[in-house]
Image 1 (tube, rainbow, N blue to C red):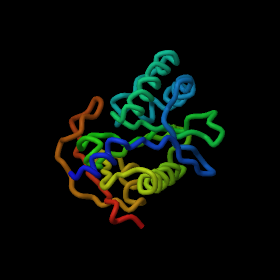
Image 2: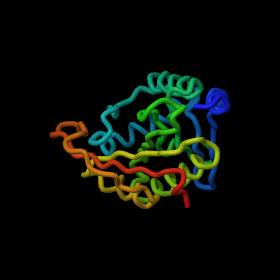
Image 3: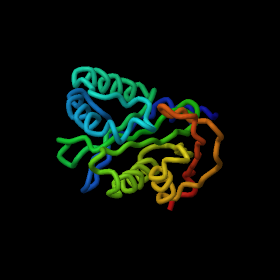
Image 4: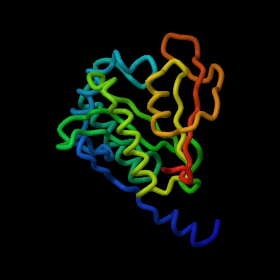
Amino acid sequence: MSSSETTRSSTFLAPDRWETPEFVLRSFRPGDGARLAAALNSSYDHLHRFMLWAIPNEDPDEVEQRVRRFHARYLLHEDFIIGILSPDESEVLGGTGFHLREGPLEQKRCEAGMWIRADLAGSGLGKRVLAALLDWAWTEWHWERISWHCSTQNVASARVAESAGLTREGTLRAALTVRGEEPHDLHVYSILRKERI
């Protein structure tokens, strides 16, 4: 890495928000806990099979502590957990993010993930959010590669990835732990900056 590249990566400041007429993508912040808890509690039955972090009856105060940790990690460039909020930011519609699971930030690779609130599932919101997330990624972030992983049984997640132009790179056998089931096979998708439309 050249000295100029090192300087650019060390002075990178993560963008904080991306707005569309339908939703806002931004870092979770102090004060978001109750809204996030409401979205999670209304969506537990929808989420818990594929999202091992989902638990029933989330306590708003505990979720508030969690969003503060999310925000701190965002500012420290350790992980970029992003809320999907209504345009007035009064409701949490879901969550997404750029996760540093493929190396440190300087390598410009991340894994994107997403969940959508249960009452909005099947509405096409996930496809629109991923399209916006990629617009943001190529415009204001420095990612060169973004991956997307999902159970082979999570058909909706695979459709979202394919709708955004991600390429299925392969399938990892028995690679995903799923609540109460034998491990699932895992689809791996990706998109590169040079493939942007």
